[in-house]
Length: 110
Length: 113
Image (cartoon, rainbow over all chains, first blue to last red; front, side):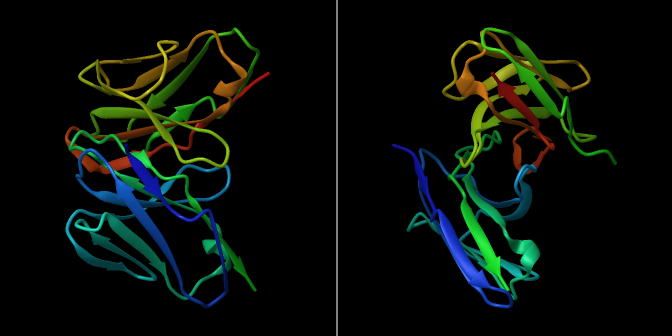
């Protein structure tokens, strides 16, 4: 089967760090994406990993291990505006179709 | 540089009706994908269009159909609407075989009563 699993919800304090894990089993692999989605809005692109390792982009970092079918998104120096759903998605081929997990709702508290 | 646009933003229909949603891709993009996102779930892939042909299709019934025009814009049609079709419908555009270039539009929220 094809599965993309991520935790349903995580809560963290403003200024803290949160790590969102994602495990996947798909028929093929052509990259892993992380998107941020605020309620009622479209997903916005955060990161793309196709090779193993860590990609850092400001307060956000994403890690990929293809052999383990595992990725994480690290959010540092959390701000209230980071409260949103974070979607892990895998592209199984080069054509662009994305398979999404159900999303992780991150709640940032003061 | 205009991003992906979708119309309408919101729509209310009743069971059994038909609906057409529209999408204009980001300038320079030639591939359009459609996704359905139910409340509290991740987006589910419906289908993808390139060169006016359906290139890939997800696990959706034939009630869901689409079209791509020569200017790369696209339509999603849903016939015989069911209550379960209520969702946010997202359009994403990209360059062919460059899935990492995918950008999402703001979506159309469909409510079926």
